[in-house]
Image (cartoon, rainbow, N blue to C red; front, side, top):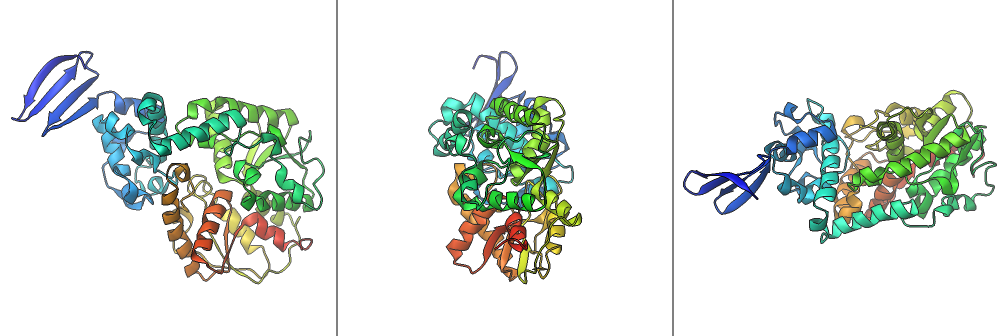
Length: 426
């Protein structure tokens, strides 16, 4: 680093400044720290977060589910940005342990989003320190995930033309399921439900509900590409433009009035990031399946039979804290005859994350099990027979935990529960 000044700090320290005054190096006690004087301004510009509002109350760190695994907890990440310790932070695994659950944002008195911050830091790490990070197994796994999405248009590198494979097990495939022009509703299935057999039941149940309600709907089939959210989480958000543009163009071509998803991450991406990244209004309504189910029940378009079961509900982070959709799923549960419902001790805005978000499962699979265990045990405390959620990833993580614990409890998506309650369902 070229220097124009070099001064002693006390007896054992040294401060050196770069020629262009953009950075300086502080040496003390045998340690050297490079300070990037423009780091904080750049992070704030990209993330849209005003970090000067942080007064270090530590509520974000206290509530963070991943904090114990982090070298730098959320509040410390903010401080490192403010201090310009760019190399220290971008090289730390801490930025990849963020679940993007927004527990921190819900507790922050100034509504600073650590999720937005870590999204920016991940992007900068991949773009500016890519070569240095290559040796990290977790980073390599994220790179592979990103390459899968960019080349095969899904997270699992499957043949994308098989996106409707789940429909092959239906007794009767709904008419117009694939690319029906003029359908009112476009069902955006998402990668997890399209390619992970454990969650096939979610789209299978949902299309049968829509059909029973007489809803006009279709899906994109092989022309549905990954929503792009995993690219943002992998620090590759700048490469998501093509997949976003493709999906929006496909929906417009079919002339659908609304896009409905059963995946909260897809919903969040379509609802917020798509118009933000494209810089334009999508021209279609974006809704989640829980809203559609509540609407169908309120319009008396579904006939349900009694289900005398005890249930509890797990709020998905992308649906609850990020989008404030707490009431629609609870209205649906209340609309099922005979069903009893009990809340977990932490619910709605305070709901614990299941551990399945933020691409953490890709970066460090072991951490996910520890987090899902906490949430699963809260569910068991309600003595529920069925743990209901509204997210394929939540269903995967909580089902895996139920199997590990050998618990006699079912984990079920809300659409599956409603489908089982239909008079026509077996």
